[in-house]
Picture 1 (cartoon, rainbow over the protein chains, first blue to last red):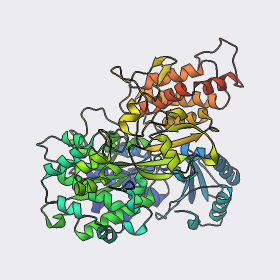
Picture 2 (tube, rainbow over the protein chains, first blue to last red):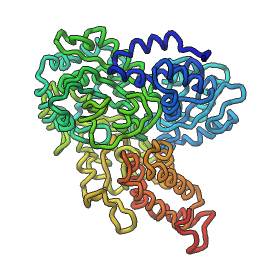
Picture 3 (cartoon, rainbow over the protein chains, first blue to last red):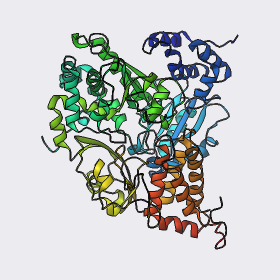
Picture 4 (cartoon, rainbow over the protein chains, first blue to last red):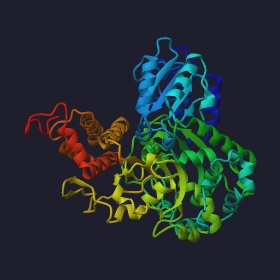
Length: 178
Length: 450
């Protein structure tokens, strides 16, 4: 028996989508979507979450684990309240993304994929966010707030500082994003 | 038709356009409505006549692809590939955000022609903002009776379901996308069988790119021939091109296929700070780079592949890379993602960053790609950052040549081709880096040793 349970919202989502897939295929097909929403609920995806999702969808825990470990948006451990993701791929790199990423590392005192000791911010270097013309670009996700994440474009030192100040103060500077 | 014709981008930057009523006021959904009572073969004939080619990367003729679906198929699926993740490419995100109804209308037209009851949009997980806009557009279309049962009052039923990815570049490869859509790891599958014959849940499935599908309303309204006339040769229509890097006005442009690399840079306000061009990647980072003197060629599918002004990619000086069947490789139009690099760019670092990406994103199924991309990134890194060893340039070429053509999907080629192109066209830069390496080994030593 596990203590964790899928929320009524997730249950409703499953019900609503089940018929969109062929008979016998829905449980597996909904694996990605349920995993992501379960992560929103529990903060990360561990063995217990994997078991809950597998049982609900009628698939094996091995299948769910295989999916959970394949995709970068599923985290095995908690990330900070804010997940600051800086793209350093070619388009952003040509616009100075590594300098921006280094500034984030220095100010937050963490390395790539590190979380500040207070659990406030996790910093990740990510691959192309499909906004190459407006680089350097970062995305900020706030746990439990699916209306975030926003893209932050044309980053410079001033903007990075403003973003980090805001995150430190406990809010996402939505006015700087789009 | 005027020179400044815009098919898809006409409503970019108009926040109203994502509302169904606004889209409809501007002529939207008329073609979807018309298609719901058309004979499927008539729609297919227009698409074939249009010379529309896939805008995701491979440039395969859409009408031909549709023709691969077996005539007696009972269940056919339509899947829209909205997993845009090829570095340098950001056009589909614009369509999803600014013009979602044009995509839905195109899907209705395609579904009608292909006999599809269930269609899916696979959208990148990272595109939260676009997902919300798209879901809202789908909900609006259902509320109006443009999706669901008996759409537009006809006997044609169509459901569209949006499925979100969770962060994996490989899922933009159509068979990996299908694996992911079925709920598994995004692992590519061997072709044949092609998805059009055996795809989603073993049924015939057409996977088309967002931009490809968004062209369909225009094609139906104006006729396939009119679309073909907009293009050149075997490529119809206009094309969305996303430009990034060292130009003054990067962004998404909808342009005729006659536009050359030099035209494109001019349209983007020229080079930033008046610098000279060093290299241009014409179609996403999987595609071989062009040098400044190769930019007079139109950025069009066939021209970029065949124009003799573009140098052929080599595996070593004087030895042409064999694409298979004796064909050589120049470059390709790919995804329309153009990366412009000026004279200050360190090409070795650009190459490393691209290879680092492919090493990160290899799905791990095929050994040449899983191991090879990792080695390529590692050797490229030490070359770029001053720790290159004698023989590293040859080593990179040899690893790349060992990956190319030896993997299930095109990700292996996507890492190998640009590597060989960088080495062919900017060999001196790599060699200089090795020569001036902090770890320069005594002459003759360590060649080929990792």
